[in-house]
Amino acid sequence: EDKVVQSPLSLVVHEGDTVTLNCSYEVTNFRSLLWYKQEKKAPTFLFMLTSSGIEKKSGRLSSILDKKELFSILNITATQTGDSAIYLCAVEETSGTYKYIFGTGTRLKVLA
Amino acid sequence: NAGVTQTPKFQVLKTGQSMTLQCAQDMNHNSMYWYRQDPGMGLRLIYYSASEGTTDKGEVPNGYNVSRLNKREFSLRLESAAPSQTSVYFCASTQGVEPQHFGDGTRLSIL
Image 1: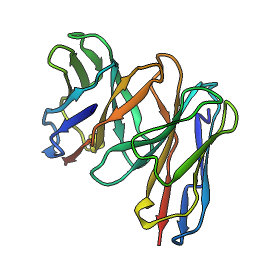
Image 2: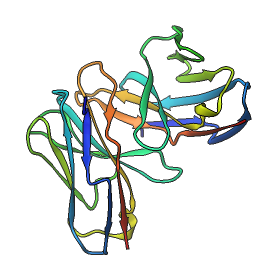
Image 3: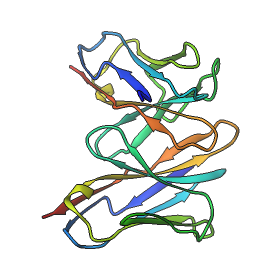
Image 4: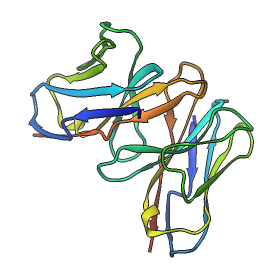
């Protein structure tokens, strides 16, 4: 059965800390891996990763994919209170229908 | 830029009542999805529609039905609501290599 596992489930840090969120997957027909940030409402898109070893960056956030070891990490440097959210990892699979399998998410709380 | 619009935003039902959650997207996407989100469970796929005229079951379809009315609209129906269906429901759409775009969710409570 296809699955996506995120760790840790929750994390509390102080402003300025660096955090690493993990996502491992077992998906038969892998197409891409996506990271989303969810605050109060809809998940908002952060990164889409399709190739191993190529880091994607956006400001203080970065992510990388390892297709051999089947995992991805999301790094956040110099955390701010506005980074407090649930971070969701999803794997898009394709067997002709492009379904997404989500992990349970990591709840990050950044204290001032 | 409306994106994905869900109605209603909140709803309280009694056990056994029926209701339909509405979702519409204005991005001309082929694929649309319904998820439920429960504490500690992430997003679980209920049903999806890869293209207009097709629908398929996801991970947790029991107790739900869907209709892909046209390319823009994808509705989710609860025929006989149960307390276990209390959740936040999200609709999403995508096409090609784009990431999924989500609506703001419907918070549903069943008493």
